[in-house]
Image 1: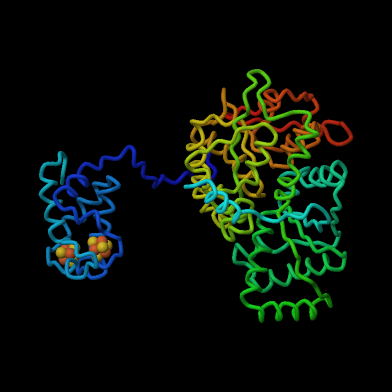
Image 2: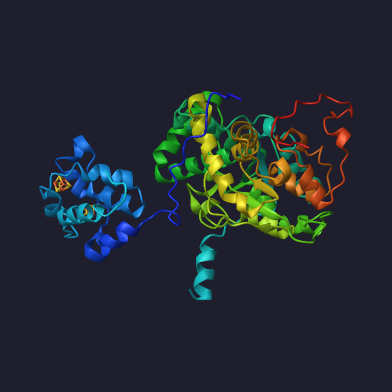
Length: 112
Length: 356
Ligand code: SF4
Ligand code: SF4
């Protein structure tokens, strides 16, 4: 029956079901990834952010939520300029994190 | 955490509820959604438990829905509410009890705003005087009607003819309690148990023999959300919220959902029909839904009032499986009879959801 409206797709993330192995591996290599406070300074300063949606904060969050499509898209947008590393109040080497994720990604099946 | 620490935290969540002498204000929408609930609240509190509860024929809407839909400014809602306070003052009462959670939230928000901005209260007093020559005193106690039933829960239990127990198995019925967002999410200290541990409904359910289910989306909104529902294009959001709750409670096999808000029981009840038509999914056993009752209806059932007098036939999800489990007798042929005991009509049945 058509009621003129439908269920919207759920945006719920079931943490018990998503694959977070990449994030765990990243934290093993770069323990700093765990210390992100999600302040968004990196995204605010990123030149690529406004046009491409690149955001280290979002990248780390997407890795923790297993949203690999979003991670892939963001990785292709970074210019590796390192501005985000300069502003991070936690002193996280965000540029190195991006490079590490790229390297880890080489081993992921079905990557773009 | 040490026990004393827990006790201390819990004491912060307690709310003083006077035992007697209340000025009662009804709800606009509850009277059409659950026509017998308010009548039975008065019947139980006044006639059965001998409390003094007064209502005025001059009471109007509180303006809460219009305010939350952004169709009137808050100052207008405040002047409407000031008039209700004036009616209470004129009747000689100082405790105000509201039937509706939207009203309760609206009244609480207004009283808190006046506390922070006394100049606004002065302006509203002036508006009220100019518009209808009335003056008012603010209520000393403001409660929601479910607070009062919570307070009287043991007196109700003492008079109970039925309990929330499956008569076949002897097991307590599994109860989902859903509390309206405006009860204590805005001002936690105004609700019994605050925003995190509201026990106003779970206290009733347990006092009457049931077992409360703690499921992941227990505190999630029912989905009404005012404009989410009132703008038709947004109704999918409203239903998606409710769907999320049903999916979350489904594995616990609830026997009944109880609520204390006007919107929640309506949407938790009616969306079960829409979800069943759209998705082919039902949440009760054998194609039935999960019955959704107001706390007054549940109190009425426990006290042995006739289910059809309590208005359970106007719910979308049939209450019969619950009545059978509790061992409450009912006459299926009288379901759609009017007060004169003549059949009013027989509604059409849904294609998927089993309703009786
Ligand atoms: S290194 Fe990448 S993410 Fe960081 S500021 Fe530069 S473009 Fe943005
Ligand atoms: S600036 Fe540093 S702490 Fe802030 S969100 Fe980015 S990575 Fe995290």
